[in-house]
Image 1 (cartoon, rainbow, N blue to C red):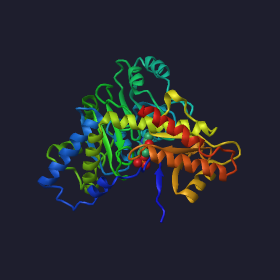
Image 2: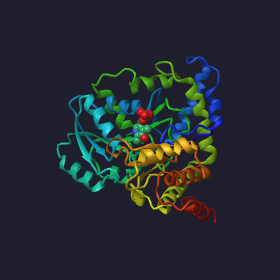
Image 3: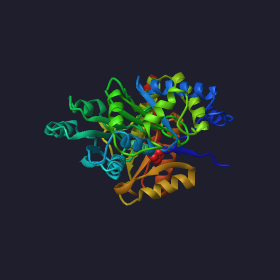
Image 4: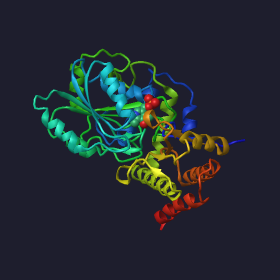
Length: 384
Ligand SMILES: *Cc1c(COP(=O)(O)O)cnc(C)c1O
């Protein structure tokens, strides 16, 4: 008998309330019960997104939502600017490229956030307004860095480019105000802070973005947001929806509402601080600086001479604690502790305890208990 601690930046653990929601019997997706269900989850999502915009739901991975955010708004031959601070920024650029956009990337070193002044400079040079959209990752899951969305949005000034955001790992774990921050398109996914299994993506669309969608010449069928909106107005979806995911979503939205959005974010912040204090107390280094450190996931550099994947496999094999590895150029250099969704203080203490013991087993000099104690102190300070 082995209880598993899943501390990934998605998929995240699923609470039993949500599991029960997922297990509901099927209903007619063209009937009145479904209309009620779709209305309920759509309204709940709008609250989480802090928006009056439509939020459409696709039965897909988060990447499907990203694809929808490209094919509905960007026509082949149009120029887009993609701000990238890691693997998921690169993915947005690649999707744009495959759908015929002329992509200019604004790259920042992995482990840092995008500099709004650099974006502002670039936008100011675009006097002919050739740039049709700016793509930004809210929370870069591959590095554990959060971009400052309000500042990046402000860098556009009154340039008419759409501001399109991947907040798949951000929304729900950190503040995001779709309307107040003037975000035209926001993409989120079910398996991050929504505490659901993978399989749903959510896309919000502003009025400006709808106008663009009408003129967009890129072909799309499955990802057609206009069809999704038309059907939503009748309480339906253009094709068969992922019904279990939606009845699960009802429960997760209830849980978020009960805890309160602010409290959910405060909890994520505390978990982040626990992880960072604990890891530092063990003498390990963090990839991200404090001021840009994600409240969803923390990237830890493996100590000299020990492969990150060896630490990970020790944690998994000896203690059944599962953390993520590094992606792309950070492969085997870092490990990432996910602390989003259905995660609380004692889960983090367990992860840190397993990390300490695993490091010791890997031959790293560690004072057992030191990381756990540092994290406990964060909690005690919070409670004081
Ligand atoms: C998880 C994630 C995605 C989507 O991942 P899928 O595997 O397609 O669900 C996209 N962007 C970011 C920032 C993510 O963390």
